View 1: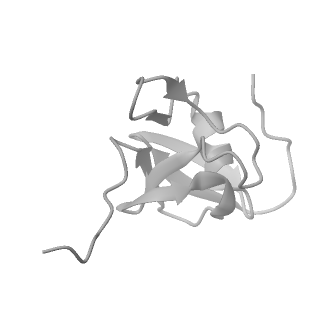
View 2 (view 1 turned 30 degrees about the horizontal axis):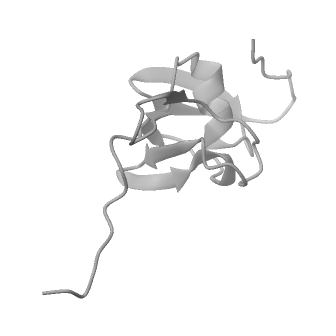
Length: 100
C-alpha cells in the first residue's frame, strides 16, 4: 500500500475523484491519486484495462488524469496545489486536425 512519509512541510488539500486528501507541499498529483486509494485513475481506450500511476517519472503515461478540468495531464509531472481537483481520465484523447 502507498503511504506518505511524515514530513515537517506544510500540507495542501486536494480533491481526488471527490475524496479530500492532504499532502505535503511539493508532492505530485500522482501521489495524491495513490494516497486517495483509488482502484484506477484511467482505463485504456482499447481494452478498458484499469491503470494507476506506475513509473512516477513521466515515462509510462499510466497516470493520465483530468487536473483542474484539463484532460490528458501526466499526474506524476504536476505538483499539487491547494484546492486542486483531480479526476479520472475518461476515454481516448481528442486530437484536433486541420481537415475540413
